Length: 420
Image (cartoon, rainbow, N blue to C red):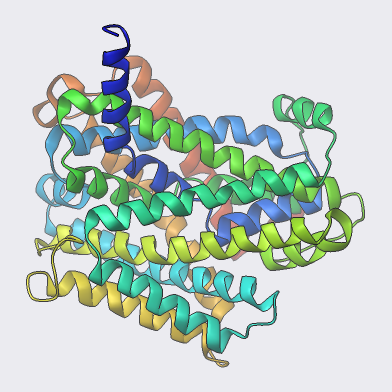
C-alpha cells in the first residue's frame, strides 16, 4: 500500500493539472487543420506522413517553452512582451493577432456549417446555434466548467482513429511511410507540405497556452506535470492528424478522388469506407470546428486584454472584465455573420488570415525565445544549450517555411518558375 499511495497521489495531481496542454494542442486540429490533412491524404496518399515526426518535435518544443514561462513567471505572454519590449510592439502584434484570429474564427464556423450540411442542415440554422452555444459556455460558465467541457471535446477526436481503422489501410505501408521521407518537388506537394507545418504552430496557440497555465495557477513544483500535459497533448494531436491522413490516403487517394475541404472528404468516404466512417469523420469535423470557435475568440480576448492591461478571465463577468467579454462576443457574432451572409468574401477573409498568421509567427517565436532565455526573468529555468539549439533550429525552419508559404501564396506560379 505504501508503494502505491504516491503513484495514486501523482495520478490525481496530474489529472488536476491536466488541461491547458492537451486542449491547446487539440484545437490545432481545427477545421483548417483537418482540411489540410484531408487534402494531404487524398492527393498524396501516405507520402506526407513522415512530416508528422519533425512536426511533433517542433510542436512540443514551442509549447513547452510557453508553458514553462507561464508557470515560472505567473504572467501571460502578452504581459511579458509588453513589459520587456514596450507598448508599441505589443499593440502592433495584438492588432495582427486579432486580424488573423478573426479569419480563423470565420473558418471554424464555416467548418461547423459544412459538417451539418452533410446531414442536410443549412448554415442559416447550424451557425447561429453553434454561436449561441460557444457564447453561453464562456460567458456563463466558470473556468473549471469550461475546461471540463473542452476536455470532453478532446475525447471526441477519437472518431478519426476509428474512421482510419474502418478505412482498412495497409498498416505496414503506413509504418514505412511514417519513417521514410518522400522527396517530391512539384508545386502542389510543396504547398501542402508547408501548409501542414504552418497549421501546427499558430501564433494564437502560444498566447492561449500561457494564459491558461497562468489562470490555472500551476505551482513551480508541479511544473513536471504540466510538461507531461503538454507533451501528451502534442502526441495525441498528431496521432489524430496521422489518422486523418491515413483515412483519406487509404480510400480517396487510390480512387483518384481530390477534395478541397474536410466536408468533401467526409462525403467521399461514404461509398469507399462505409457510411459510418463518413459519419464519424463529419462528427469529428463538427466537434473540432465548434471547439476551435470557442478557443480562438477566447485566446484573442486573453491576449488583447492582457497586453493592454485590462481585466480578463472566464471567472469574471461583463462588469469586472467588459473588454474581455465584449471582444469575445464581437468575434463570435461577426464570424458567424460572415458565414451566413451570402455576400461575405469568405475565401478572401480566410486567405488574408493565413497571410497575417505567416507574417506574425516569426515575431512571436523570436519574442518567446528572447523571453525564455532571460535569466532575470526565468532564473534557473532558462533554456539549456541543447534545448536552445533545438528551439532556435525549429524557429528558423518555421521562419523559412513561413516566408516560402507567403511567397507561394502571393505568387502562385513561383514553384514552376524555380523548377519545383
